[in-house]
Amino acid sequence: MTIQQMRYFLVLAKELHFWKTSEKVHISQSSLSRQIQSLEGELGFKLLERDKRNVELTEAGTFIQQRWELLLNELNQTHREAKKISAGTSGVISIAYPGSISFDFLPNLIKKFAEEMPDLKIELTEPTDINHEKLILDHHIDIAFSRDIIVNPTIASSKLYSEPICLVVAENHWLNKDNFEDLRTVRDENFIISALHHTTFFASLLRQIFNTYGFEPKTSIESDFGGMILKLVSQNLGISILPYSFQFATDYDVRFINLSEKVDLFINWRKNDQSQIVKNVLNHSIELGKKYDL
Image (cartoon, rainbow, N blue to C red; front, side, top):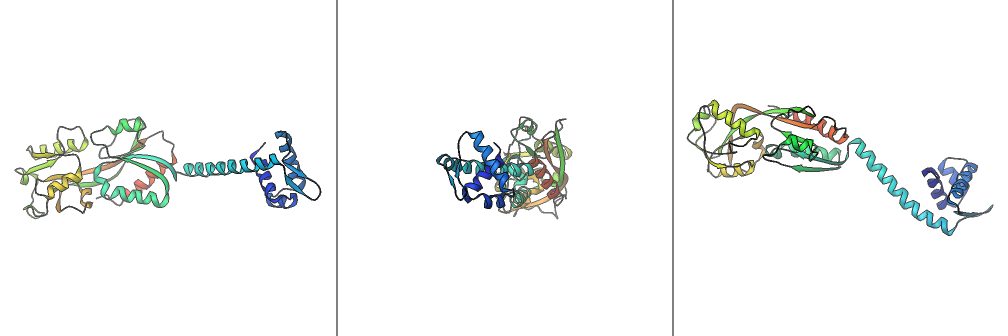
């Protein structure tokens, strides 16, 4: 029994006419008759009662018709879904990202997915002090956006863009672009930053920046969450240092002053991942990243 034979039977069960059915399925009437006889022979019972004038379904034929219609509909749906997965437009992808890209780059990327891959399910996670390398290798995530490149022979990475590091102050703060010289200008200010003892890339970058200017910051509040930092800075509780991307968070009364240092954004994935979904996400990310390079 073949799927094609099942399809022939279902058309015949609807038409109850061999000639009309043969026209619809594009085979000769004699070939259709042989296909149905072969099907009945394999099943071991009659599907149709027929004479020179009439064709009728047997009771077993009616039962088979109802069940095969459901079965083939499910099979067709399965094939359609599989085709979307093969094309990378359907399925699930898990993405880890730093909070700084959640205000502009990531929403724009997801908007692109929604337009071109509406059946794609996206799982987002914002790990703080967690090893992206381990998450990828353990298959907890498929793609990681990160501020540092992952050096591992089984992980591929691509730089998407670079952007400035910025000093962030309240809108009514005395400091502005005109009177700012370098970071030593604010060495006596209270800082709201990520804990410098953390092992994250950004904490390491902050340590490097402060070492360059020869002072240890007076840290009044420690936080890894950019949104919280912006809110606290806007209330004049301290100043901070954040990537330029946080400028796209428009609900805060803060001012950004570019520093000379820059930070990169990388996309990382398993080298042996053959998923077309991953490939599509990579292509869209690389193309969008070109618009953000500063």
